[in-house]
Image 1 (tube, rainbow, N blue to C red):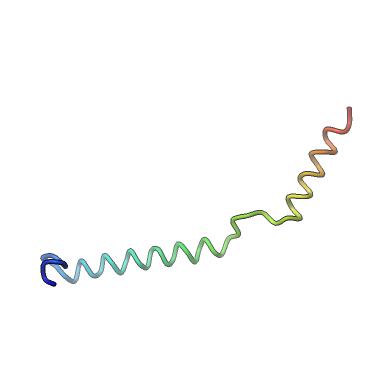
Image 2: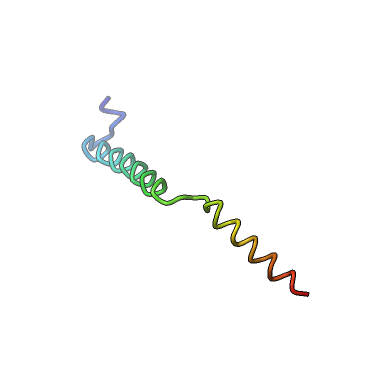
Length: 56
């Protein structure tokens, strides 16, 4: 076990804890913001585009 944790086992455990906490915090932040736009917003944009091109 001593060889696995290296010369400073407290520092190694701390680095692992910080890495796990960083992954967790990143997941929480990414789940807070939606990654896909809502369908209603997408539909409105498509209608606006079609109106722009229908005025020939």
